Amino acid sequence: MQPADVNTPVVPPPGVRSEIARELYELGLGLLQADNLKAARLQFHKARTMAPDFHDASLALGHCLHELGEYKQALAVYDQVLIDMPQLYAGWNNRGNTLLALCRHDEAAVSYARALELAPKLHDARVALATCHQAMGRIKEALAACEEVLAAAPEHAEAHWNRSLLLLLTGEYREGWREYEWRWKKRGFTSPRRDFLQPRWHGEPASGKTILIHAEQGFGDTLQFCRYVQLVAARGLRVIFECHPPLVTLMESLAGGKVSVVAMGEPLPSFFDLQVPLMSLPLIFDTTLETIPETVPYLTPSRERLPHWQCQIPEKDSLKIGLCWAGKSYPDPGRSCPVELLAPLAETRGVSWYSLQTGWKDALPFPMIDLTCHIRDFGDTAALISQLDLVITVDTAVAHLAGALGKPACLMLPYAPDWRWMLEREDSPWYPTMRLFRQQKAGDWESVIQRIAGFLQPKILM
Image 1: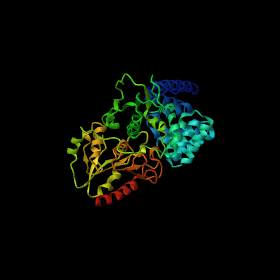
Image 2: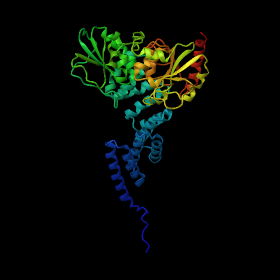
Image 3: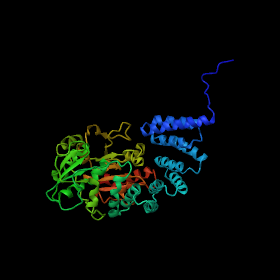
């Protein structure tokens, strides 16, 4: 009798396979809880292979693939599960999440709608459906979805958060700022709530007291809303402003240099009476479209930094334009313009182009002067921009910096813009020197570039 081939897998009977699959699944759950996604993915894959009809393992595998950014593989897993189990609402919901991550908003909306048909109380799916509606320009439908969730679950933080962004997007600022306070309860919010012994300031008279204003979220948020710091100082409070380290040098110009600036991560001063998060100040000051503190510039470059950049960018007869075409892929991968689409701008004669794209390692879209290796922080970026005539940028911190400096700027916006740029307008109530160029349909950067090129021509001839 011939010995068994050691490479031939031994296939256990169905009952044993189910038990092994369950054990592998439980092992995967433990690894998932330990945040070991790759190891968990392997165990879920083994469990699914051992028992193809074990749909919990398939859903868990899809979840791991999604979290690892392997969206197409995750989608394939969910599609297979739903062929076998079309009534599995969790499968439709998870499929929607993955399609949303792929920016396939119309398909994601269909998946969420199917999940809600099967499970009408699946509130997270309805909030995600609102996100899809917003991305497709269906603002009324998005608001209605959020409000339907809140009617059934008044404490649903994600619904409040999405509703706040929609209200701000449409200019309903008073209610929008109130809803924005729900950000602290939102799962995975980028700036967790901070607790202090000192009470939070709500706008009450406090002249002579010392207040800590602590920045939150990203660079752009701080650059846009630091304008409120000087409003607080104007009420007679001594202000300590805590911000991201790369912003410290620039922020020292706030309120005529009368603000004490501290970098995040550094020890705070030992004494202050009150504290407030930066992004709560628009609510405290009852900001509406008519009362936005729009005066620019409210930031100025450091005097110590200017001489270096004045030498780097000498006076020229040509128009000096800075260009920034990419932002962070999170939270919105659609706000960056593919570099190859910028080529028509190079046809504009009489322009000296300067790159404002820090960290760019690929080829530049066309010949331009790249001085970004000299940039240490936003103090340098501000000094560089101050020497330019115009900035063309996507929605990134550079846009807010140009606006805060009062520099003329062209802002390239995706079809579904961030809330602060509102809808349809060509101007910004936050930045008087900025002009907005919007996509007319999703992904259409070509027409945006063409309109900016047309906008530049008269300026070249002046």
